[in-house]
Image 1 (cartoon, rainbow, N blue to C red):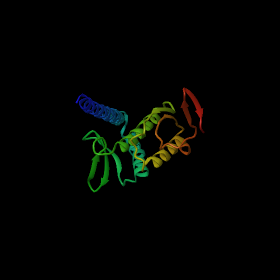
Image 2 (cartoon, rainbow, N blue to C red):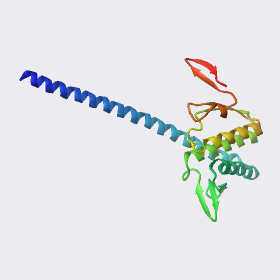
Image 3 (tube, one colour):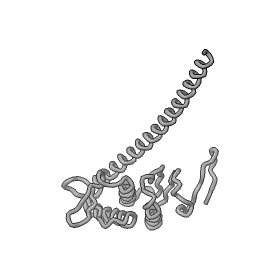
Image 4 (cartoon, one colour):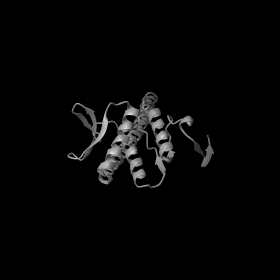
Length: 196
């Protein structure tokens, strides 16, 4: 009788331990997902802030130039038949699809589109103020979808070449391949190893 009771207890205990391990794994997974969502939320907030800063700093003529550059990015990267415009009455940047159809860039669009437009505004502000020509970026483009990523990188490379920018990008993004970079280093065991 004691042996049978001990056996059932052991089985129950083992089953509970497995359930606890499974629950711990789920909690860890949820914590990782929460961290990713919080990181993306922070990035979106920085994008929204950058777009707000852009409107405060741009004059009417430079605003038009910035809209043109952002429109070029939206069309060439995402294939959207729309223009980026600033609506001074509403104090916001919009995508204008024509025929009266418009959408707010900060609320109705994908995170990737906001990242691209914010990047364009940042570059434009740097060009306008003749500031630094080296940008340091950390995981800055993770929200650009895989479908648009190669065109985005082509756009970035073209802008950097044409306007004399250098970008130092820290990334774990496997979509960024050696052919997309001029130089590439991998940090392994605390040491930098040149890959390209």
